[in-house]
Picture (cartoon, rainbow, N blue to C red):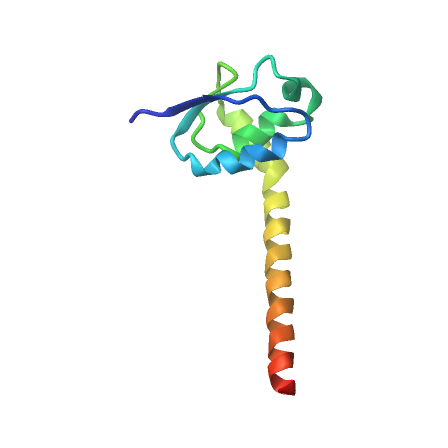
Length: 104
């Protein structure tokens, strides 16, 4: 299958926008070489490898099993925590709506 290649001009502080690229399921080659985000954003490689699951190449180098394991270790718990926060927020919203209905 043919993959998508991308070079994306990110600035420091925008590294989280890599998550938006998850929608490109066929993205196989991604580069932010010669971009300040590579040196100024901590864990930029882990972020790209974790969120862009189909990557074969990152910054021109193969994505290894070890890179994937490190990225998973670093970010999986963050994702779980974020989902738990969403669920908690939805639960509170449902409780508030239920309480409002009881009062009516």
